[in-house]
Structures are given as structure tokens and as C-alpha cells.
Image (cartoon, rainbow, N blue to C red; front, side):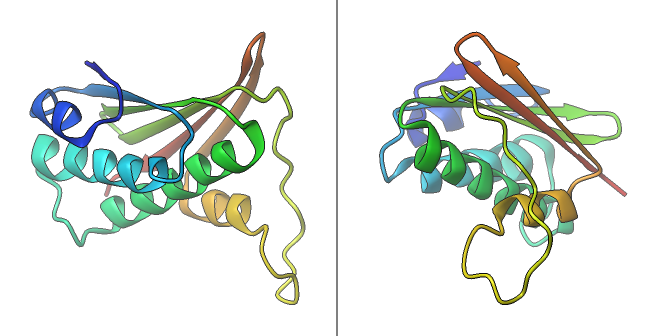
Length: 143
């Protein structure tokens, strides 16, 4: 199912599906919309408890990756979620070909900790440059 990121349209096609996707215009509301989309996919579509570790991790990962797409790619982005046997895969596509770089942990640094957070929460991280941007895929393993 593909959605334009609208919460209403996105919510209707997720129950029981192993994959769902949404496209966002890069506006300020896209971060909250993407978090809601991920939450509905996991809770309504796959029966995860709203306060579970997996839902919390995916919400934060989606927030960080979509925030980075909004902040650095300056255009639309897409979010794909897939329920796989080992857990959940989150993929964010954006229009920037610049690959993210994990910085060394620095508690004195203000900001720019998003990728550190994502890497701490996931079990697999992959980034691929594409002709029109990049694709970042993250896996969160379920217990």
C-alpha cells in the first residue's frame, strides 16, 4: 500500500499487511505524520503493545531519519515499513545523495546525535546512494 502520508489514508490499508509505505512532502508536519504512520502499522496492523520496546525504538528511528531527510534533503521523502520474521525494517528514502556520517559520541555536543541514536537502537543499518538520493534501511529485531 502506498499513501501520500495522510494519516487517514495511511491507516486504512495497514491491518495485517507485512509492508506499508508513505510519501511526505518534507513539510514540518511530516515528522509527526511518519511517527503516527509507524505506530499504526505496528500497533493496529501487527498487534504490538503501544508501550513496547519495538514500538518505541521504531518511533524514535522514524523520527530521527525523517527529521534528517527534512533537514538535509530539502524535498520529499518516503517511508517504508516491513514486518519481517526477525523484526521490523524501516526504510527512508530522500533526495540528497550525501551519505550520513556517524560522529563520535560527545556528550558536550549540542545536537547532531540523531544517527548515534538510530545506531544504538537498531540491529542492522545500511545506506545506499541512489541516482536521485539515498536509501537508509534499519532493522529492529523483535524478541
